[in-house]
Image (cartoon, rainbow, N blue to C red):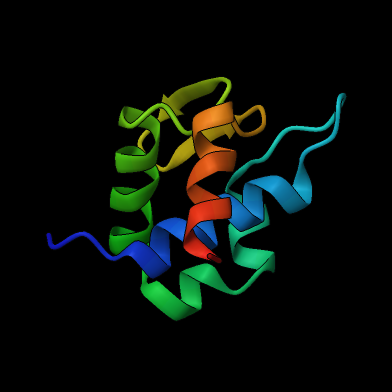
Length: 86
């Protein structure tokens, strides 16, 4: 699948929007933000995996296929967002 920088940016924005010190991101956050509808489940999950592999998340835990938790953005993730708006 071809990398879609807009999808990566939207994933990171959702993680940034929904995480707090005590709150994690789960698949429902991406549904609530309309990303599943916008990109489709397969494309979205693929780009979440790509973002995780690039080190954009502080912590990523995959429970089962399509079920995961994310604990905020890493410094690298924040830098990607800053660069994408420059």
